Length: 380
Image (cartoon, rainbow, N blue to C red; front, side):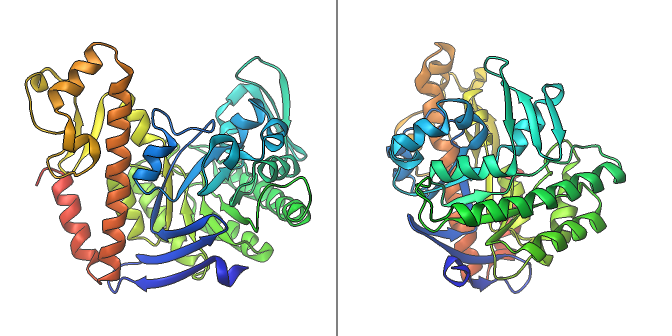
């Protein structure tokens, strides 16, 4: 499966950027790719038809949230996540590790797995590598993530070392359970792929050690976890620049939970192929839109009579039809449509940016594109 799953088609001559193709049972995904986040089976404020119109090839589902509600058994009985949410394209599910990490005092980590209290009703729950694999198998993911411990920031070297070691042990257990589940009747997936998750905090030698542990096990793809959790942006870039090129060249590289449009461009330059982030929809719900000239808060009073679109260089359906003045009016009135319009535009901006990135790599012009794009985002 490995050779069929991913291949690199173009490499930038100046940076580490590369353009490739991921093949799943539910469609091909051109990389670099941004994946909209559909936490509870929906990308917030937009419909599946809208996502299809934007040509999103893959979206994310969240193991933790779907495990708690409506429950993976319910989703399985209804034909799997793809049928449940009426989405016939590819799906990646995270392992639940990051959400459990985010619970803080509500969770206890031990070798077997993580005991935690549900954020919904306080009930006692348990997730382990094996359970995470079973949940993701029942959901029918095309790309499954290993169950890991997300290293916090700040973390001492000892804490980061302990975290990467338990992540490595859990990765081996995830691989074993995943391989046993692939062809069982409890799976709605077809030839899924399993990604290992690199940890180690901001310590480069520990990142290398974590990667060694993962490569020993062998995965269809490799993710960089434990970044964008509070460290300075420069450190996130430095860690990515250090570890991404060390990852197997014939496997996709996925930077989890990152980030702004500028972050995506900078990390493509450092060798990353896949990204996800809640920022396009989360920021949209607060009135913040991403444009070719940087971020803009459309709720500002200066837009009250502004007849221009959200982004004068954007050709999405929202920018072709609606004015800043109208969108601002919707926010002031508390209308739900405001979040939908801005979420749609932000997703369009992210997805279009990645298409332009890929085209620049294919043409051998990524370095020039990167410089122009970042200068323009700064208002240049």
